[in-house]
Image (cartoon, rainbow, N blue to C red):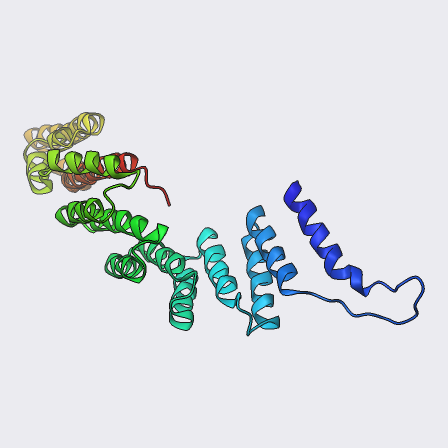
Length: 297
């Protein structure tokens, strides 16, 4: 509510000079200052109106292209896109800030969010490069330490657990007095404890279900699916065998033909279940690491 009131007040400030003075017939145009225009964008941003905020920041860049605050306005355009989950556009905007304004006051901020945007897009190598760039730009920036934590998690997502651990050790060496140092030590201990993650073999799961339908599902921890696959395939196999025994080959062919996709699906499904089990184990550890680091983005 306060944000909406602020927006209205800012609009009044911008429009008020255009009102005719009571004792003068002279007309005045609307006067919009840099401060007013930026505050409009910031107000919409705080309200969560990201696309309207982008419009106001772009108006600022159009009206005041040579302003000392142009780098800030462009960074905020990128940030609004990031928060609006337009990660591709955000990446390009942050890169433009970096390329255009070099070592400006928002360079580290922009580089960090460029890394996050690339991470969201699954471009892990480029995200790691962006985070390294932030650290190299200014080791004392609040975003430098965050960039190291971010890079450690990017490495984990890229299935590079040793790389994840390396970045955490690098964090402790660079920022031993950081309030999160104890969290980082706990995370390193967690990684050391889980160097070899438990794993289910998709091939073994498929072979098991080929011999005993449903057994591969049970191996992968999907007991309900395993029992269902055993019953369904068992019925089709039993029906086919009985029909052959009674020399009713037409029925045997029909029942066997209908049951074959279920049998093949049981093999592939078991293999997929094992793969998903492995992914679940990785996600579980990933969640524990994020909680341990108290890292959110």
